[in-house]
Picture (tube, rainbow, N blue to C red):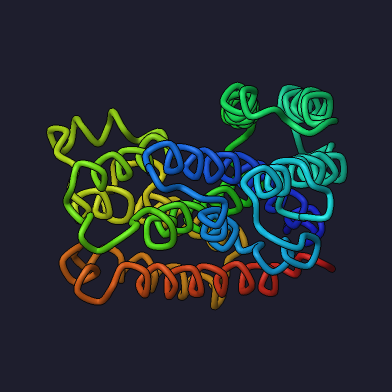
Amino acid sequence: MVMLGRTANGLYWMFRYIERAENIARLVDAGLRVSLTRSGATDEDWNGVLQSADVLDIYLANNSKVTAADAIDFLIRDKNNASSVMSCVDSARNNARMVRTALTRETWEATNECWIELKQILSRRLKSADLPEVIDTIKRRAGLIRGAFHGSMLRNEIYNFARIGTFIERADNTSRILDVKYYVLLPAVTQVGSSLDNMQWESILRSVSAHRSYRWTYDGEYRPANIADFLILNGQMPRSLVYSYEKIVSNLGYIGKEYGQRLSAHETADSIRHSLLTTTIGTIMDQGLHEFLDNFIARNNRLGQEITEGYRFYS
Protein backbone atom coordinates (compact mmCIF):
# COMPACT_ATOMS: atom_id res chain seq x y z
CA MET A 1 0.00 0.00 0.00
CA VAL A 2 1.35 3.43 -0.94
CA MET A 3 1.85 5.69 2.05
CA LEU A 4 -0.29 8.82 2.22
CA GLY A 5 1.62 11.94 1.15
CA ARG A 6 0.90 13.77 4.39
CA THR A 7 2.31 10.86 6.44
CA ALA A 8 5.47 10.74 4.33
CA ASN A 9 5.68 14.53 4.71
CA GLY A 10 5.39 14.32 8.50
CA LEU A 11 8.11 11.67 8.81
CA TYR A 12 10.44 13.41 6.37
CA TRP A 13 10.12 16.79 8.08
CA MET A 14 10.15 15.42 11.62
CA PHE A 15 13.62 14.07 11.02
CA ARG A 16 14.78 17.05 8.99
CA TYR A 17 13.89 19.30 11.93
CA ILE A 18 15.59 17.04 14.48
CA GLU A 19 18.73 17.06 12.37
CA ARG A 20 18.48 20.83 11.84
CA ALA A 21 18.13 21.51 15.57
CA GLU A 22 21.31 19.59 16.27
CA ASN A 23 23.19 21.15 13.40
CA ILE A 24 22.20 24.72 14.27
CA ALA A 25 23.61 23.96 17.72
CA ARG A 26 26.78 22.70 16.02
CA LEU A 27 26.97 25.86 13.92
CA VAL A 28 26.77 27.99 17.08
CA ASP A 29 29.46 25.78 18.60
CA ALA A 30 31.65 26.37 15.52
CA GLY A 31 31.15 30.14 15.88
CA LEU A 32 32.03 30.02 19.57
CA ARG A 33 35.15 27.96 18.98
CA VAL A 34 36.27 30.25 16.17
CA SER A 35 35.81 33.35 18.34
CA LEU A 36 37.98 31.78 21.03
CA THR A 37 40.85 31.25 18.56
CA ARG A 38 40.82 34.77 17.14
CA SER A 39 42.61 37.51 19.03
CA GLY A 40 40.72 40.20 17.13
CA ALA A 41 37.30 38.55 17.22
CA THR A 42 34.35 40.94 16.98
CA ASP A 43 30.57 40.71 17.06
CA GLU A 44 30.58 41.12 13.28
CA ASP A 45 32.11 37.65 12.98
CA TRP A 46 28.62 36.30 13.70
CA ASN A 47 27.47 37.74 10.36
CA GLY A 48 29.06 34.73 8.72
CA VAL A 49 27.48 32.24 11.10
CA LEU A 50 24.03 33.75 10.49
CA GLN A 51 24.66 33.75 6.75
CA SER A 52 25.80 30.11 6.83
CA ALA A 53 22.55 29.24 8.63
CA ASP A 54 20.71 31.17 5.90
CA VAL A 55 18.98 33.43 8.45
CA LEU A 56 20.94 36.70 8.23
CA ASP A 57 18.14 38.58 6.45
CA ILE A 58 15.55 37.42 9.00
CA TYR A 59 17.89 38.38 11.83
CA LEU A 60 18.44 41.89 10.45
CA ALA A 61 14.68 42.33 10.02
CA ASN A 62 14.34 41.83 13.79
CA ASN A 63 17.61 43.38 15.06
CA SER A 64 19.34 46.66 14.28
CA LYS A 65 22.87 45.22 14.37
CA VAL A 66 24.70 41.93 14.76
CA THR A 67 26.02 41.16 18.24
CA ALA A 68 27.32 37.83 19.51
CA ALA A 69 24.73 37.61 22.30
CA ASP A 70 21.78 38.46 20.05
CA ALA A 71 22.96 36.16 17.24
CA ILE A 72 23.32 33.23 19.62
CA ASP A 73 19.90 33.87 21.14
CA PHE A 74 18.37 34.16 17.67
CA LEU A 75 19.92 30.86 16.55
CA ILE A 76 19.13 28.93 19.73
CA ARG A 77 15.75 30.06 21.02
CA ASP A 78 14.10 32.89 19.07
CA LYS A 79 10.58 31.93 17.89
CA ASN A 80 10.84 34.58 15.11
CA ASN A 81 13.47 32.32 13.55
CA ALA A 82 11.85 29.19 12.11
CA SER A 83 15.30 27.56 12.05
CA SER A 84 16.22 28.25 15.68
CA VAL A 85 16.85 25.16 17.78
CA MET A 86 13.65 25.66 19.80
CA SER A 87 11.55 26.32 16.68
CA CYS A 88 12.95 23.17 15.06
CA VAL A 89 12.21 21.03 18.12
CA ASP A 90 8.67 22.45 18.21
CA SER A 91 8.22 21.62 14.53
CA ALA A 92 9.70 18.12 14.94
CA ARG A 93 7.30 17.35 17.79
CA ASN A 94 4.31 18.73 15.86
CA ASN A 95 5.18 16.49 12.91
CA ALA A 96 5.70 13.54 15.26
CA ARG A 97 2.21 14.10 16.70
CA MET A 98 0.78 14.18 13.19
CA VAL A 99 2.31 10.76 12.37
CA ARG A 100 2.08 9.36 15.90
CA THR A 101 0.57 6.04 14.74
CA ALA A 102 3.49 5.50 12.34
CA LEU A 103 6.06 5.77 15.16
CA THR A 104 6.99 3.35 17.91
CA ARG A 105 6.31 4.38 21.50
CA GLU A 106 10.05 4.70 22.14
CA THR A 107 10.51 7.15 19.26
CA TRP A 108 7.57 9.31 20.31
CA GLU A 109 8.67 9.40 23.96
CA ALA A 110 12.25 10.36 23.06
CA THR A 111 10.90 13.20 20.87
CA ASN A 112 8.46 14.43 23.51
CA GLU A 113 11.07 14.31 26.28
CA CYS A 114 13.47 16.31 24.11
CA TRP A 115 10.78 18.97 23.63
CA ILE A 116 9.95 19.11 27.36
CA GLU A 117 13.58 19.46 28.47
CA LEU A 118 14.57 22.05 25.87
CA LYS A 119 11.41 24.08 26.41
CA GLN A 120 12.42 24.37 30.06
CA ILE A 121 16.11 25.05 29.44
CA LEU A 122 15.44 27.61 26.69
CA SER A 123 12.59 29.43 28.43
CA ARG A 124 14.93 32.34 29.16
CA ARG A 125 17.98 33.92 27.56
CA LEU A 126 21.10 31.82 28.10
CA LYS A 127 24.21 32.94 29.96
CA SER A 128 27.40 32.47 27.96
CA ALA A 129 28.78 30.14 30.65
CA ASP A 130 25.81 27.80 30.14
CA LEU A 131 26.12 27.53 26.36
CA PRO A 132 28.51 24.53 26.13
CA GLU A 133 26.29 22.42 28.39
CA VAL A 134 23.12 23.45 26.50
CA ILE A 135 24.72 22.61 23.14
CA ASP A 136 25.73 19.19 24.51
CA THR A 137 22.17 18.63 25.76
CA ILE A 138 20.73 19.42 22.31
CA LYS A 139 23.14 17.00 20.63
CA ARG A 140 22.46 14.30 23.22
CA ARG A 141 18.68 14.60 22.93
CA ALA A 142 18.83 14.43 19.13
CA GLY A 143 21.00 11.33 19.45
CA LEU A 144 18.49 9.69 21.78
CA ILE A 145 15.67 10.23 19.28
CA ARG A 146 17.73 8.69 16.48
CA GLY A 147 18.76 5.79 18.74
CA ALA A 148 15.17 5.04 19.73
CA PHE A 149 14.12 5.21 16.08
CA HIS A 150 16.89 2.93 14.80
CA GLY A 151 16.40 0.42 17.58
CA SER A 152 12.65 0.02 17.29
CA MET A 153 11.37 0.82 13.78
CA LEU A 154 10.64 -1.58 10.93
CA ARG A 155 12.86 -1.05 7.87
CA ASN A 156 9.97 -0.04 5.63
CA GLU A 157 8.96 3.13 3.77
CA ILE A 158 8.36 4.88 7.12
CA TYR A 159 12.02 4.32 7.94
CA ASN A 160 13.10 5.31 4.41
CA PHE A 161 11.34 8.70 4.38
CA ALA A 162 12.72 9.53 7.82
CA ARG A 163 16.24 8.63 6.74
CA ILE A 164 15.99 10.65 3.52
CA GLY A 165 14.92 13.69 5.55
CA THR A 166 17.80 13.17 7.97
CA PHE A 167 20.49 12.97 5.31
CA ILE A 168 19.24 15.75 3.04
CA GLU A 169 19.34 18.01 6.09
CA ARG A 170 22.70 16.66 7.24
CA ALA A 171 24.28 17.22 3.82
CA ASP A 172 22.95 20.79 3.81
CA ASN A 173 24.28 21.50 7.28
CA THR A 174 27.70 19.90 6.86
CA SER A 175 28.23 22.04 3.76
CA ARG A 176 27.12 25.17 5.66
CA ILE A 177 29.36 24.47 8.66
CA LEU A 178 32.32 23.90 6.34
CA ASP A 179 31.46 27.15 4.57
CA VAL A 180 31.82 29.06 7.88
CA LYS A 181 35.55 28.78 7.23
CA TYR A 182 35.22 31.06 4.23
CA TYR A 183 33.05 33.62 5.98
CA VAL A 184 34.63 34.14 9.38
CA LEU A 185 37.68 32.04 10.10
CA LEU A 186 40.52 33.85 8.36
CA PRO A 187 41.34 37.45 9.35
CA ALA A 188 43.79 37.70 6.46
CA VAL A 189 45.15 35.65 3.58
CA THR A 190 48.54 35.75 5.30
CA GLN A 191 47.15 33.49 8.03
CA VAL A 192 46.63 30.55 5.66
CA GLY A 193 48.70 27.59 6.86
CA SER A 194 49.63 29.29 10.14
CA SER A 195 49.13 27.82 13.62
CA LEU A 196 46.05 30.06 13.95
CA ASP A 197 44.64 28.64 10.74
CA ASN A 198 45.21 25.10 12.03
CA MET A 199 43.45 25.87 15.31
CA GLN A 200 40.46 27.21 13.44
CA TRP A 201 40.22 24.13 11.21
CA GLU A 202 40.43 22.00 14.35
CA SER A 203 37.44 23.95 15.71
CA ILE A 204 35.41 23.07 12.61
CA LEU A 205 36.25 19.37 13.04
CA ARG A 206 35.23 19.43 16.69
CA SER A 207 31.93 21.11 15.83
CA VAL A 208 30.94 18.12 13.65
CA SER A 209 32.31 15.52 16.10
CA ALA A 210 35.01 14.61 13.60
CA HIS A 211 38.20 15.66 15.38
CA ARG A 212 39.33 12.23 16.59
CA SER A 213 38.26 10.36 13.46
CA TYR A 214 40.10 12.92 11.32
CA ARG A 215 43.27 12.33 13.35
CA TRP A 216 42.93 8.59 12.78
CA THR A 217 42.61 9.14 9.03
CA TYR A 218 45.23 11.86 8.47
CA ASP A 219 47.61 11.34 11.42
CA GLY A 220 46.51 14.62 12.98
CA GLU A 221 47.96 16.92 10.31
CA TYR A 222 45.60 19.86 9.77
CA ARG A 223 45.53 20.73 6.10
CA PRO A 224 42.57 22.56 4.56
CA ALA A 225 42.41 20.18 1.57
CA ASN A 226 42.47 17.12 3.84
CA ILE A 227 39.73 18.50 6.09
CA ALA A 228 37.56 19.46 3.12
CA ASP A 229 38.19 16.00 1.64
CA PHE A 230 37.15 14.38 4.93
CA LEU A 231 33.89 16.31 5.22
CA ILE A 232 32.97 16.11 1.52
CA LEU A 233 34.37 12.93 -0.04
CA ASN A 234 35.19 10.44 2.74
CA GLY A 235 32.59 7.67 2.54
CA GLN A 236 33.37 6.41 6.05
CA MET A 237 32.65 9.75 7.74
CA PRO A 238 28.94 9.77 8.76
CA ARG A 239 28.54 13.54 8.31
CA SER A 240 30.29 13.78 4.96
CA LEU A 241 28.43 14.75 1.81
CA VAL A 242 29.23 11.52 -0.01
CA TYR A 243 28.11 9.37 2.95
CA SER A 244 24.86 11.34 3.14
CA TYR A 245 24.20 10.77 -0.54
CA GLU A 246 24.91 7.04 -0.32
CA LYS A 247 22.12 6.88 2.28
CA ILE A 248 19.77 9.14 0.32
CA VAL A 249 20.18 7.11 -2.88
CA SER A 250 19.77 3.74 -1.12
CA ASN A 251 16.64 4.82 0.78
CA LEU A 252 15.10 6.38 -2.33
CA GLY A 253 15.91 3.11 -4.10
CA TYR A 254 14.00 1.08 -1.51
CA ILE A 255 10.97 3.37 -1.90
CA GLY A 256 11.19 3.19 -5.69
CA LYS A 257 11.23 -0.61 -5.50
CA GLU A 258 8.37 -0.65 -2.98
CA TYR A 259 6.19 1.65 -5.13
CA GLY A 260 7.35 0.25 -8.46
CA GLN A 261 8.37 3.59 -9.94
CA ARG A 262 11.32 5.93 -10.37
CA LEU A 263 10.80 9.68 -10.21
CA SER A 264 12.92 12.70 -11.16
CA ALA A 265 14.15 12.72 -7.55
CA HIS A 266 15.86 9.37 -8.15
CA GLU A 267 17.72 10.74 -11.18
CA THR A 268 18.76 13.91 -9.33
CA ALA A 269 20.01 11.97 -6.30
CA ASP A 270 21.94 9.56 -8.53
CA SER A 271 23.49 12.50 -10.40
CA ILE A 272 24.62 14.26 -7.21
CA ARG A 273 26.05 11.03 -5.79
CA HIS A 274 27.88 10.32 -9.07
CA SER A 275 29.40 13.82 -9.15
CA LEU A 276 30.68 13.39 -5.59
CA LEU A 277 32.15 9.96 -6.31
CA THR A 278 33.92 11.06 -9.49
CA THR A 279 35.49 14.33 -8.35
CA THR A 280 38.65 14.92 -6.33
CA ILE A 281 39.42 17.39 -3.60
CA GLY A 282 42.02 18.95 -5.89
CA THR A 283 39.36 19.69 -8.49
CA ILE A 284 37.07 21.15 -5.80
CA MET A 285 39.78 23.41 -4.36
CA ASP A 286 40.76 24.58 -7.87
CA GLN A 287 37.12 25.41 -8.60
CA GLY A 288 36.82 27.17 -5.24
CA LEU A 289 35.47 25.51 -2.12
CA HIS A 290 32.87 28.23 -1.48
CA GLU A 291 31.60 28.00 -5.07
CA PHE A 292 31.44 24.20 -4.88
CA LEU A 293 29.47 24.31 -1.62
CA ASP A 294 27.07 26.95 -2.96
CA ASN A 295 26.35 24.77 -5.98
CA PHE A 296 25.94 21.66 -3.83
CA ILE A 297 23.47 23.38 -1.49
CA ALA A 298 21.37 24.49 -4.48
CA ARG A 299 21.29 20.96 -5.95
CA ASN A 300 20.48 19.45 -2.56
CA ASN A 301 17.59 21.90 -2.15
CA ARG A 302 16.31 20.99 -5.61
CA LEU A 303 16.28 17.31 -4.65
CA GLY A 304 14.23 18.12 -1.54
CA GLN A 305 11.69 19.93 -3.69
CA GLU A 306 11.50 17.05 -6.16
CA ILE A 307 10.85 14.59 -3.33
CA THR A 308 8.10 16.85 -1.98
CA GLU A 309 6.42 17.05 -5.40
CA GLY A 310 7.03 13.47 -6.48
CA TYR A 311 5.58 11.89 -3.35
CA ARG A 312 2.77 14.45 -3.04
CA PHE A 313 3.66 15.49 0.47
CA TYR A 314 0.70 17.83 0.77
CA SER A 315 -2.03 15.59 -0.68
